[in-house]
Length: 125
Image (cartoon, rainbow, N blue to C red):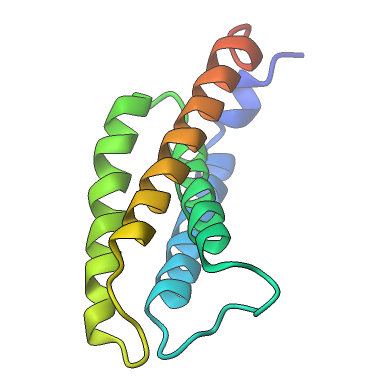
């Protein structure tokens, strides 16, 4: 049974978009909450990388086959930069160009993973 009817069923589309809203809310909280709220057992760069991989993955799932990966990058990259720059307004946070670089690398890695899934995993659907 092909997945296409299931993936593009209105209820599943609603769930896919809902997970994006939840992911963005979590991303915003983690990035802008006052003070360090990241567990000390994880390095800061790893949290930035993982957060941006998950952000892009959420956008990709929510907009599956609706927008190209290039378009998704053109949306997530400025969003990530704006959030990083907004940290200047959060107490205990600071803007760090290294964080922006790690954010960019996370988005690019996620885009490559999603592209591979599209090419090799979803090509038959």
